[in-house]
Image (cartoon, rainbow, N blue to C red; front, side, top):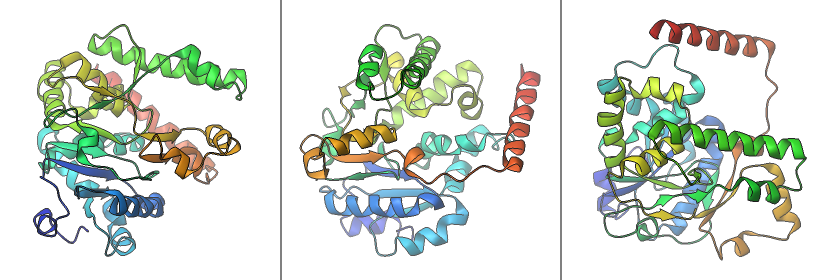
Length: 319
């Protein structure tokens, strides 16, 4: 756990070669899901890759108690954000809270703990054994997990969903992909990089993105993420555009249920963990639908709209 630095984990054989680690960004509401993930990694992590979990400082004590005796190292989000601030300055007061998770994932590399990190969300878990090699094309080159996004196929696969809903989903995905393609100068095939987790990211790519692309753009990662809020598309499209490491595509390793209707169809077809494990290493139950949603109060909504208004005013002055 957090309680033990990486050096001690290596003594116990929990870390492989130090070059690649597992990383999860979590928080209090997802704590039990994170515990399920850690347990699945303990059972299936055949190369003993070190696992790091980052949570808000105020959740550290609860996670420490919940994960006591389990093989992971706890970090605080504030540690990662402090490393980011050394290069980018203090986090802006108006930085949107819903982007904190993406920022932490994009900036974890700055701690210098690895050359590559396999990141996975708390709502996912492994169902069969995995090794480091499953994420690599060769000894040095990590895969880029991606799939071709085909709007017509996506619409056909969602024929159980009302037409307006599925058309809206597909239109939003296409618009997102095309926006990032235009930004990085890519064209042609529509690639989706967030079909499911885990994804493996190279620190070489992230460092190049910050020190070459963002510097050339005259922005830091805070400003860029506000304008282009999708960490998976940022990494994937930038790798394709820059090719600072070889682009080695691979299909997603987990069966992902992004919407409740996808899970219900799977259940009606009689699928189970055993059958899914024939083709996938794990399962993702997207927490946006798997969580019981609390009704937002009027005060919450007012604060949210006020914050968004202030952010827009702030950006106008910057322009």
